[in-house]
Image 1 (cartoon, rainbow, N blue to C red):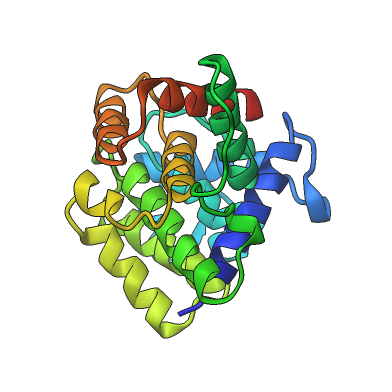
Image 2: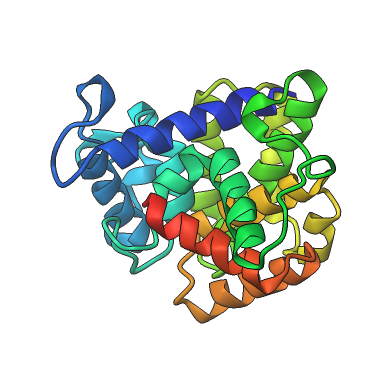
Length: 248
């Protein structure tokens, strides 16, 4: 399974999407936000038939959406959500490890404690080998569950997400795992058990915040369940959410 490769490419997509504003072009000369706007409208039902006809919809080839395809699907498939809305916290996805670490340090300083990092675990970006692969799976699982928290990813959208992740180079084992995660019951306790360190727990929560709208009651409920399952103190969860909002 090549989870670390897929996560790294999703983080790169998030970086490109974050850097594009308005109708400006992101990296590689692609109008990322414009493509995601079109994709969001299509997923909202304005042209659902087009997605089944050679992958074409709204005048563009969905298989070419590598400037923001899988990322756009995960964060933008919720019906009625504006792609330019406050819920799209691409910066939090792109810098998940460092921001989660910063949130922990800030929460420690706020309560006058010392930031003893000995048992906290490493950030995802400095891990390697099997440890990086495991953390990547944890974060991908958290993202997919969070994206499903409002119940609005249907079978067509599941197929599109799998297609886009395949286009990033997923191997067969990864493909099968993604399909399974898109259909598995939402279970905050089961997800939390995958966290291999306090830092992993913070990263899992932060990346979940990044792909949800905390103003949506169903998504807010999921975040609260996950924070409890991960045993995150309220001040840490609040700081993670603040870091996600600031990152944009």
